[in-house]
Image 1 (cartoon, rainbow, N blue to C red):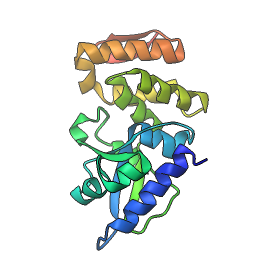
Image 2: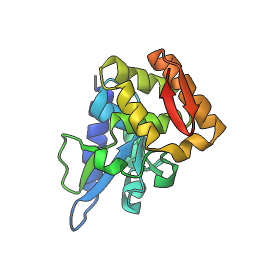
Image 3: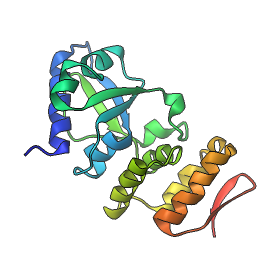
Image 4: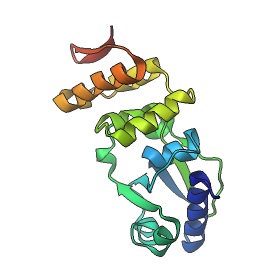
Length: 185
């Protein structure tokens, strides 16, 4: 039986074969797809959330494409403005170990994936977060540091509530927002 990780690699390999470009495209992956490719190969996902991918990637691998129907997974285009992380997040992203001819895939850091998930904190987000935590990829101090480098998100009450919930449920810590900064007490 093919694992989810292998299924994604097979999908990406066929996607790579279907496009032709002058030089390899840099693709930046976030969300559950990033978790599956780098942090927890047993993680399940149905979409690969790429930040502002070229149109050809979405056409060939997007929802409803022949590749998506074949593999049960699809490329999802996410606008960078909707990724709730510090602006330097690309410098923290890591390339995956798989080599492709027409693109290079970078996955957001574990901390930045978590910050992106804090914005909505649905059940699947908690599943992804706990799998990374259980495998030793999450460090509360690093997450707190990245969070405090991303203070424009703290302005909304929903995000503040999610930060408090996240630290309580994941690290059994009390988070407070004081003078615009998140602190653990």
